Amino acid sequence: SGMIADFLKFDSPVSFLLLALSTPFYLLLCFNRGILQGRQLFTQFALTFLTETLVRLLSTVFIILVLKNHLYLIELLTVSFVLSFVISSILTQVQGTEFAQKEDKGIIILEIKPLMTFICFMALYEFSQIVISHSDVLLAKHYLQADQAGMYAAISLIGRMIYYGTWTFVMMLFPKVIEARERSEDTGPLLLVTIGVVFFLGTCATLFSYFWGDLLLSLLFGKAYTGAGHYLYLYAMATTLFAVANVVVYYYLSLDDYVPVFLSLMFGGLQVAAITVFHDSIGELIIAQLVLMSVFMTSLMMYHFLLRPLIHLSRHDRTPQLMTV
Image 1 (cartoon, rainbow, N blue to C red):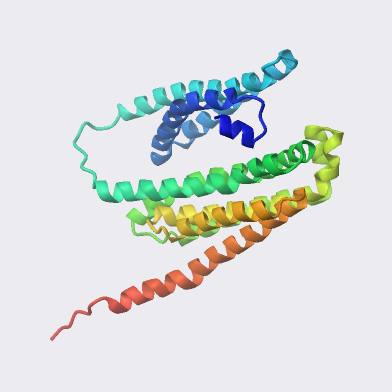
Image 2 (cartoon, rainbow, N blue to C red):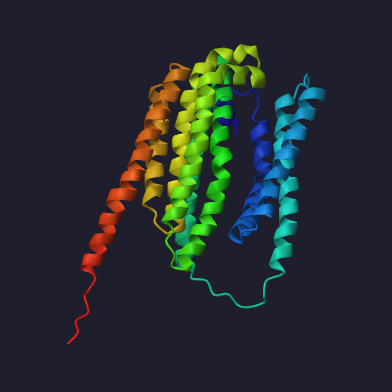
């Protein structure tokens, strides 16, 4: 925690220790969300996010308004995160237990090897997702001056609305594709529809940011941030590309195809490397990400339309043919 605090220029490591204490509650929350998602109980699934968000929002607003001059303001804000994890995990656990009790009592035999394989690749992808989504803000905090880092954090916060705003469709896609595959149905239309919706929403947000970026920053953060409006649409564009790529990778994860996971890991590492080299200004950071996300999206499209069909064709050609007399 001391090393992290020094790297991110924090005065104290206490915030990171508090977040570490909340980790078990957050893992429990994620686990029970997975149960609700897998059972396609999307209403209850959405309520868990709503609960977490409201608890965090209300407690944060209270702390800022009432205790804004407190010596340990940052640590108190961290407590709002911890509180949201604890309350949400408790509520989700009750729901998950309730639904689990409705299951028929029986013996379920799982094939451990494919299950563990899936968990490992899912963990790898989640790791790459975290790197792509959050490494830019952390590196900006390290490399840029305090005012520029704050400006970049504001831009990324608005731009990331695209990613989280379209996340709902990805969460619905995952179990739907698995269900369609189990019924031997074509899963392609599900992918195309989800990509279309995510791309449309991201494009609308990018256009809005292009014309009214300064206004949006001014309304949300104050007039001091209006100078960064011309960066916002570029960040929104990069985030849209990442959101669409996320749809494709999750689609293939649901089909037990893990090649896109390695692509995601590679571009996550390339993003960190690029920002390490190009970090003299906000513009350099955003352009580096925009270029990488464009190449990432192009790589996934090439895999989907060219490489994967060739792999399947090659496997089909190697399949022994039955001969009849």
